[in-house]
Length: 363
Length: 105
Image 1 (cartoon, rainbow over the protein chains, first blue to last red):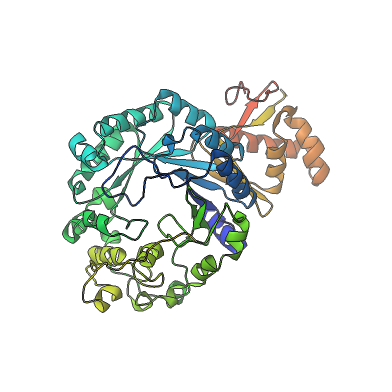
Image 2: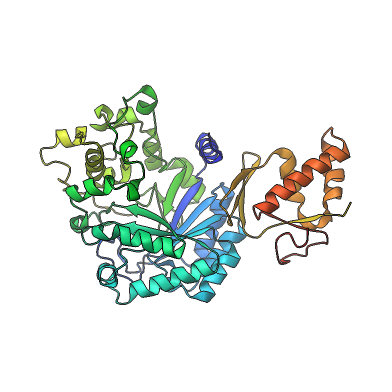
């Protein structure tokens, strides 16, 4: 067992939120076509409020802190927040489009001991990348930002969200990452809008393209292993937890709302009205999330993919039932193995029949 | 034997979980979980107290171990953490915000 697994096990046993994803703003300088956020500021927390929440998070044992947005560099006080976070000894990861990262910003991040920076790049071709971000010149500026980050000695991961419009460019982005000395990660997940809207799902890559992605050794490594039929479901899997959301991880919005995960918009409390620890320990919503085991899942509990599926309870929640299947993950399991999921078999509409998402409202 | 001074690097993250310190280096993302003795050394790494004094006054006072053995173990631990950029080591006191890893060790 690795030290990280031991650490996660300990956090789970002790009820510690080891990892927190904290969006410091939803405002952004890009308007990515697939983005799930409302970029208007509806009253985001002040830097002082955010620093106060960070104090609470450190006190309860949070170790891994991801600061993101929106675009975090839109906030003038970002470095004030980062300095406070580092003074509290968090392991800090920053997610940004790097458009506003110059040499000075990169060096400050390095001096602060930010552990890594994740930057979204959609294509190596400006017309494709800028077409997605709706910001002219954004690829050029993003790459300049990455170069500043790398020159300062920071670890950079290029996150490549794959969509209809850029699925053909994964190899180009991968080469770009290699040439910049950055890590590469891909993600074919498109998340519905925070208000439940499904319009952005039109950007999901088609099933036949997903098949190709999952059989590309440059993208998934060991294709045979990745696409292998699922192992028989055993008792450990049936008694297992769906994921870390709400167990050792959670998400905090710029308005102070606490959710189990950035992709699981179930309102559990608000840190402006309640201490974080109270929410973490006493929220009925989190208690419900924590009560769910593999055997409790609708359809999925009888699915052959139960032990190997990437099922996201947040996406399932957005489809109306946190215990139900997430159609996007059903589709991925099918694309990997050619074996239909129980969720697909029980819905005549198939995996793409995403309708009637829940509407997300704050508590 | 030349004296050694140790200071915690500013490029690390750390947290006490259930009485144990967990440390991660921002330089190479290595994760450490420190033992009780290592925790003592880590907490005493103020850049001003010589390692020999940390060993003598904290470790030997707390554990049944000879000063020579304790010092050798402490030195190996310190060198390991220094390699990962977690501790700074110098033959001179390291003032707060002092620059450079392994100043001259």
